[in-house]
Image (tube, rainbow, N blue to C red; front, side):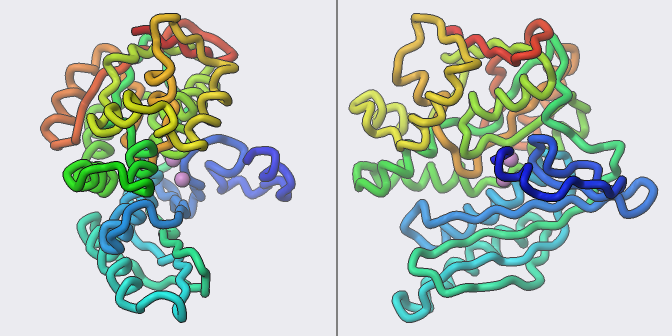
Amino acid sequence: MQTVLKELPPITDPNVLVGINSGDDCAVYQIADGLAIIQTVDYFTPIVDDPYDYGAIAVANALSDVYAMGAKPLIALNVVGFHSRGLPLEILIRMMKGGGDKAREAGVSIIGGHTIDDKEPKYGLSVTGIIDPADIVYNSTAQVGDVLFLTKPLGVGILTTGIKRRTVSKAAIARGVEVMATLNRDASLAMIEVGINACTDITGYGLLGHLGEMTQGSGVGARIHARAVPVMQASRDLIDADLDAVPSGSKNNLKFVSSFVNFDPGITEAERLMLADAQTSGGLLISCPAKKADGLEAALKDAGTIIAARIGTMEAEDDTGRIDVVP
Ligand code: CO
Ligand code: CO
């Protein structure tokens, strides 16, 4: 993406605090002393069959980048593709209802949007929020010695591929929907309260891809304990039964990260693929000073996040941001 973005005109406005030159999750623009607006847009094609669930997941996913930077989302615009002559309007209404209910849970008002005719449905949001520039949480400010926390289990990419292939139980689908539709708001509030060094959310590049952005941006190396990383059981079952349960995007992620990830020989192919699995509406990956780790774990648990797992540490300074994955 960076190769495409560099075709855009250079940014010269000094009020642009976070723009296209960093790998951060949102753009940030200062509008007054102590006040900046934060913006992000995200949308995708259906990943579950139920249009209400799809809408809720799309909204939780779109808001996630704002939460990853420690900001407060306020308003949003719907971004919709829908084939009005090919699909019953009831489906669009259910998508909007699922999205609207999720936005209301987040305290975000959807105040407009735009729909185009599109054979394959698409839904998401353009989100606007606010933050004090002094409080921005970057993904490039991790420190040596930090403890890494993850707030949702992995495996959503494998699970949704299984849903498309009709190889997943109803209970597993329900669990996947629950994980994806959970807002990252409470995890975000917990990390703000504790005060951490860096954060990002896990989405299409998988855990190792997003961690790589963090280590490379911060100039530190990381060590991940593969068996400390929580995974949805249904996804583990799918991949254990057949390595081809993994979507091609996740296989490509694994190829991409292999230039900066060292896998211990004891890590199986299934484990490698899981750590690279493309997530939708994944959890926050938080880099927390070691002396605050107990406090963050307690705050995440109080906030009721799905998990509050310690999955590794930031190691010595390293310009290449190498990641060691050990059992
Ligand atoms: Co993100
Ligand atoms: Co995004």
